[in-house]
Amino acid sequence: MLQPRYIVLFFILFTCGFGFSQTKNIDSLVHLLNSTSNSSEKIARYLTLFEQHQSIEKDSLFKYAIRAKTLAVNSNKNAQTLVNIALINAYYRFDKFDSALLLTNIELKKYSVKDQSAIYKRLLTLKC
Image: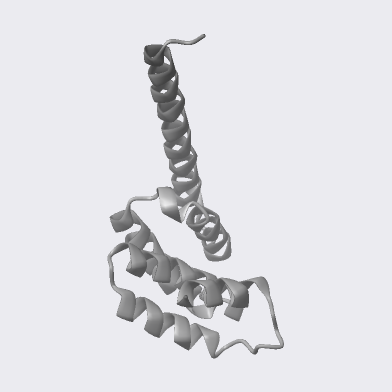
């Protein structure tokens, strides 16, 4: 039977390894983002980065969301909404619930109930 100190040691080692792998993944995504010059590819890389939004520091998430929003001005509706979802997540992280709710309501108006797309469902989830 394992002694409690070995269980604690195992837990600490497991947690540290997981934390570093998340940071390494985000660092590699940021490196790919900085090495891309095409704006449509850059938006795609931002969207991939935003999938890790819970592991990104809130200041960095907000900064990336604002940069992506300026790039997505000429993109399609779905790309703009996905970038705004990242901005909504950043607002939630800064406890700006009123701004998050306002932006969520604006984005929900772009989609119909009949649409039932994944983006629509994500927006409904953020509204709750």
